[in-house]
Amino acid sequence: MIEINLKEPEKKKFTFGFFLWNLPRFFYFLITRIGLDIFSPNFPRFLGFIAKVLAAILLVLTIHEFGHYSEMKRYGVEVQEFSIGIGMPLFQYTSEDGELVSLRLVPIMAYVMPSQRGVEKLGEISSFARFNIYFAGVRNNIFTGWALVVGMQFFSVFRRRDWSVFLKDLLFSPVRILVLFFGFTVAFFHKWGTEVVQRHRFEIRDVAENEHINRVLWWSFCLGFLNFLPLGVFDGGRIFLSPILSATDNWWILFLLPLTSQTLLFFCFIRGIRIRELVDYQ
Image (cartoon, rainbow, N blue to C red; front, side):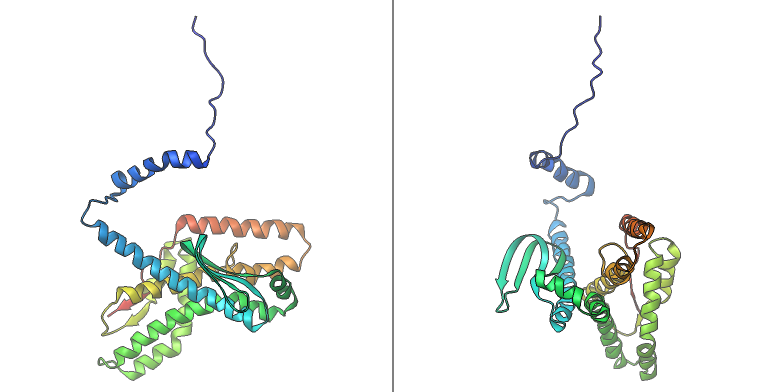
């Protein structure tokens, strides 16, 4: 007689040892399926590309977080830590004001952490002051991208471009930024948003394309636009959602608004940013 074991198979728990055991499989997948071969002549070029991208991201994140930091100092909000990156600290410095400045291992995020007294101060200052603090990062990113565009457009004036065209572009640049933000938002849900961005990109004439400027410009605008969306833990969520949640006792709003926000945030991350170019070189 054959005995049949109907016991459910034991589920493997995710532990640090389990992670280390499967790490070689992960690298084998990268090499065989993705083509990340360390013996390939293209591998140094790949590492150089990754280094350039990380440098651009760190620069844009630092500019973003410095906006929050400067506004906190302006309104008397005590800062505990200004960190570039997350995870294990690689370098830390304590300023004369007792603020900790950190460079951490994983360069994909940055943050400004207020102290306990700083958190209490945030609750005491006016709504306008809180708006300035939360919006400062978005403001810095968009201004950085705009300044790079205007700088290249100004340089192109000396390459046979009419001053009237430059002044017209400068005058209507705020409207163009609003249109790009609208297209950026719609692009998460429909390809029509990408088409809007393609039609209203910044125009640069008679200037050679520079990959480093393009990279900083793209990350500046995309990080600014993304953070202004009223979703989750983004700055836009603190600007638009937090006042609504703090001003109501309706449990439907308290439940559905964060749930909708987190759902849309997850959807946006799954879809990914579908905007590839924000500048049209002519």
